[in-house]
Length: 281
Image (cartoon, rainbow, N blue to C red; front, side, top):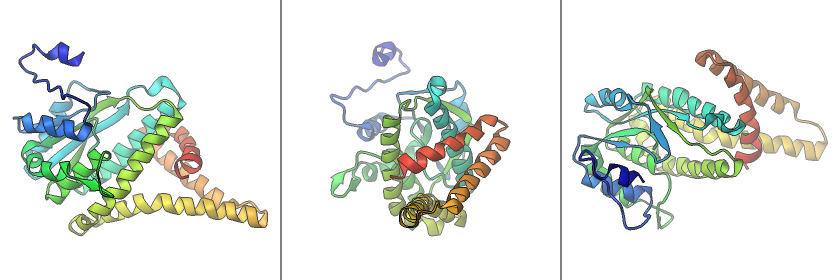
């Protein structure tokens, strides 16, 4: 439908590959046919605000910047309780994690729904991007994070622009959401190992951030397992561990609610149950 709608518009050059070869090869085919200074990546389920390009391009005026991403929101936020939680999760990922990383010059993952790249930088990285293997097989996941890591390894900065808004469709059922999160977690752990050599050349905050992102879930899982073992072996409820998790969750959600000036973020505490009982296992 998209190809038919824009095929006669001289501003567009539609590439239709003979078969579904995956996101990575489709990106590479488009980048190799491109001619502009910038390449904008937009996922197929995403709608951009009308001023996104105008907001992203000024960041790219600095030749040291290789990529920049916009802020993500849930396009179907009002579908269910889960989509509302995911919308808040996206706000946190963008306006806490990415914003803090950008403050120190290195957003660690420029997300696919809305990311702009310097084409000259991409051209020098395409062979590495295309030939990534994991456990002896061509990689078919984690494209956004890996491309960002390659940008950083090449010496470019990566940025975040909160005013460039992109609305993307998010899973409205638990099954697809958990599969998505598992895929992203695999990418995070794999590419963290690949990116460890970057850290000595980046700000020390980013080392702390990467260590926290990777060890935090493992420590939480250890706390939960220890509590369950205490309950099973001694018959006593691990109140201290439970209260600590509850307190940290409520403090975090309260601070975010104040920063965003939106009381709905207090409800994000419900995500802790999904995290502990579904995502961690």
